[in-house]
Structures are given as C-alpha cells and as structure tokens.
Image 1 (spheres, helix red, strand yellow):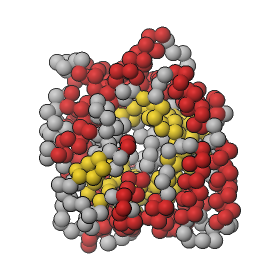
Image 2: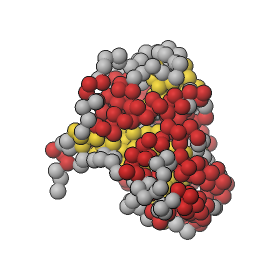
Image 3: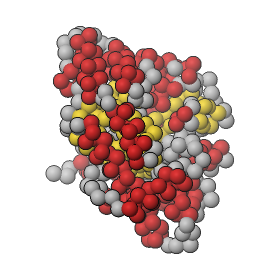
Length: 453
C-alpha cells in the first residue's frame, strides 16, 4: 500500500485541526477451540487464548500511534459468540466466563471486550438460553465486557420470543446496575443482520466465518467531514456528495495503513476497515453538526433523514474506493448521548424518538445510546426492538437497539454516563401498550427479499 507525501500532509491536518482519529484497533480472536465440558476448563482455555494472542496488542497500537502521529483512542478485543461454547458446559450461569473475559481484558490493557453474545434470529439452543439468562448479572459483575444478541435477519425473519426476552433482559440489566444509572445497558445491543467483523462496541464479536485472529480497524472523522462540507456552502448535492466521498477516501486510507502495520507486527491477518462516522461528546466531533452544515437548522428537523441518507451513502462509496476491505458497519452512527449536537437537538425538542427511528432506516446502525424513563415497561422496550428489527429485515441492512431505561429518572431529567458514552436528556416514549403484540411469540416470517438464491 503506497502512501503519497500529499496524503501524509492531509492526514496531519485532519489530526491536528479536524479531530480525526483511529477510533479503535480491535483484535478478533476465535475461541472455538476453547470448548470444554466444565466451566473451569472453558474459563482457563479462554483466558490462556486471549493472553497469548493479545499480549502485545496495546503496545503495538501505542507504538503505531507514536510513529504515525495518528491518535488511536481505543484498543479492544472481540471473541467468538460465547453462547457457542455454552451448550456442553456443566453449569447454566455463564457469569464466570464474563468475569474471565473481564480479567483477561484488564490484564492485556484493552478498554472493552465484545462477544458475550448469541445469534438467535431463528431459535435458541441450550447455550443461547444460558447466555441470555446470564446477561444482567454478567454486565453487573464486569467493567469491560460487552454483550450483543442478534434476534433477526433478512433470511430468517424476527424471533419474537427473543425480542420479548430482550425487553425483560434490558429492564433487569438496568435495575441490576441502578447505582450507575443503568450503565449495564450501555454495554448491551440487540441486532438485526449483525456483521461478523464489526470492531465497534458494544456490538463487536468475532464471527464464525472469521480467521483464527484478525485485526479490524475502526476509523472516525466527523470533524473532517463537517469542515469539508462547511467549505462548500452553496454547491449542489452532487458536489456535496463528491466532497464527502473524497474525505472518506482519505480517512479510510489512513485507517488501512494502521491496520496493515498492526496486523503485520502482531502476526495475524488484516481484516477490515470500518469507516464509521462515530461521534464523541467533544465539541466539533458530531454527526448532527455534519447534517446541520448541509443546511438543516437543527438535527431532527425536516430534511434530516435525507441529509443522513446522502452522508451515509457517500461515506460508503468513498471507503470502497480507498480499500478492498471495507466492512463492519461503515457509515454514520447516531448515538444520542455520545453526540453533543444530538443532545442539543433533544433538549430543544427538535429530535424525538420517532424521528430517530426514521433516521435509522438510512444510517449504519440504529437506535443507539438512548436514555428512556426508568418506568418504561419491558413490553414497550420489546416493541421498540421489534420496530427497529423490521426496518433491518425489510431493508436488508444492519439495525440495532441500545437503549437505557434509567432507574429513577423521568422525561426532562438528565443522565451522565461519563467518558465516550457522554450524557443525555431522558427521551419521551409512547405510553400506548404493545404488550399483547409482543407476547404472541413465534417468529415473524422472513420477507420476500430473503428469496435471493
């Protein structure tokens, strides 16, 4: 991969002025050879495998950060969905595995480890049920472990039994982490069409089609894209899309350089670059501000969904031009609490939950980091999940739900999660019941779009 001097100077400007960074270097590790008949055996095998594979991950990332001058914000690990190891274990509670993952993550120095996960879009195995039952306690007992559950896909439809359970699990997780404003829910995502190579938390896992170990890179540069758009206030949409594509191209090239260097030094495969405009609470690092730079007075107003669709498409096209290995989620994230511009829009009453749902039809993920009133019913959360999953199933795209029913908080209150998770007002949610709907159970059949063979 040849990098020109011009690209180097452009990257320096992106870093120094426009908040460009490598959001995460994530090592995916297969744990398929860690299956054992006993809990102790599984935990020992998992710990030894992670410590061996990821021993030098943080050091290599820090070396690359110093050498290339590009900030690498997070160093992370994703692992094989733990439910796949749980069918033959002699215990039902998988919290010891979560604690083992947490211990290994702490000792190698990464900030998060993903993969306490299950894929249940068409039904449950014994291991799947064990994992789902263990999620609330596991997230309470750990700091770095992230969990995800895929409950739907375009090929399988929507597992409504799983959707119903996830409403209950999210409520239970919030209650068990009440002392931290339900923070456990910030580490739990419900997916449709989950990707196997996503480096971003909380939904990262190492899919069963992946190699023994890989390096996946997540890059982000909302500030770079916003500045590019701000420089062309009076141009038409074709010109605007081209500017975003060129910017995404540069960001992706820098990410692939870091990814290939890291994989070579660690002796593992290079996986993908996930080009996702992932905001942070920092000023100038907002996806909402990109949309506003296009001419929307405030994110959430008329035109917002169209602006987001243009942004998401142009980002993907620019990334695909820059690398043959763009993957993961790649597009624009809209996590409310992590985006200062979106928090402002919520506070002003412009950005609402129904508008966010509409925006998820064209963004790269879904309803993300949304704080709900603590008394929101589990069935209501299940209904929100079902709606979001249907968007993903019908449109053949990844969608997800990460909501936090914050204990003891109501609409109008404010919650502080801290760090990259940011802070948010509590959003209003409909009080109309959907309990009888989500309790029906069974599976919403796959749509006609699934018949693609």
